[in-house]
Structures are given as structure tokens and as C-alpha cells.
Image (cartoon, rainbow, N blue to C red):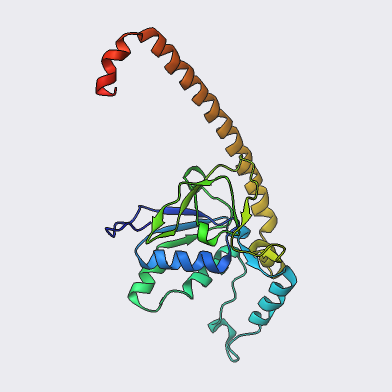
Length: 238
């Protein structure tokens, strides 16, 4: 996230789950041009407005666009969700200039959550979310608008509070489902790997909760042991 002084955070990892494709791409494109490094994970769970059949027909029309004499010269039709997102963001950046080329080099996109990003804090972008969740908190503001916020562990139950960017009852589909329909062969592989990752994350989260309980218990025991000495330490906020 770019601050008012123009200083960027080291790297922001965005969890793309439940984000609308166009809104997500436009916000990330602007951040990249401002100098921010962005990593996007779980691209297969990006949402697109419109049903799967509609989006598939739209993509098949796109597949027919090719160079007549030498199709390998372009346009290139990506099937993987991460590459589709990358291409969408590229279309919002002047990528043929030095500035745009440098901005695009700051972007990384992945299906699933590969190491080492499975152990880093992941963020969401409220302005691009299909829904707002109770597990979204800590909103950072840039020029009066919400940009990146933290996202809680997968182990927490997600309950929809209100619709944010998609009308109630409006059809939508996931980018991973569309990619599977048009030739992406790793949908099932990514799903299996994600299930394994979530199991490991659940175990780690339970262990973290147990350690937190032990810490509270130890602090309470230390307070009882110190007794009156705490009054001496209180003025210096020890």
C-alpha cells in the first residue's frame, strides 16, 4: 500500500477469493503503477458477473480472434485463472512503456496459495469484494477510499453480512470453473492441494490458540507471584 509520503509496503499479498475480476484488476493496476509490489493468490476463486454459460460463450468468441497467417503471433488466449487475471491487469496498464513494463514486473499471480505465501498475512480489497464478511477488519484508507484489509484464517466460519458489489440474485461464476470449461487441466489438482493446505492451516491455528491460552495463564500466574511489585513497575509501563 502506498502511503501519503509515497513509501510502499514491502509486498502485499491479496487473497482474490470472492473478488470481482474487473474491480480487483483496476485497483491492483493503480497500485502497481504507484510502485507497490502485489502478489495475488487463489485466482481460481475470483468471481465474474454473469452465469457460466454466458461467460463461456463470451470466451469462445474471444478464442476465434487470431492472426490469420500466423496464429502463434497472437492474440494469446490464456486458460489458467492466474494468467487471465494477469492479462486483465495488463490491459489496464501502459505495458509497452518503461513505466508500465516496470509496473507489470511488480505483479505475481498464482492459483491456490503456494509457499511461502501460505504463511504470510493475506489481504482483501473491500471495494472489489462480492460480499463483505465479518472476518474482514482493519481497513486502511488511501485518499478517502478503502484499499487493502487483512483477512482472517480459513478456519473461521464465513457468514455473509450484505451484498456489496453484486445485486442480490444476480448470476455469477468463478474464474476457475470457466478456465476448466475452456481447457485448463489443473482445476482438480489445485483443489486437492488447497484441501491439504487448509488441513495444515487448521492444525496450526488450533495450536496457536492453545499457545495463546497458555500465555494468558502464565501471565496471570506471574501477576499473582509478583503481587505488590507490579505497582512499582506500573509507572514505567513495564
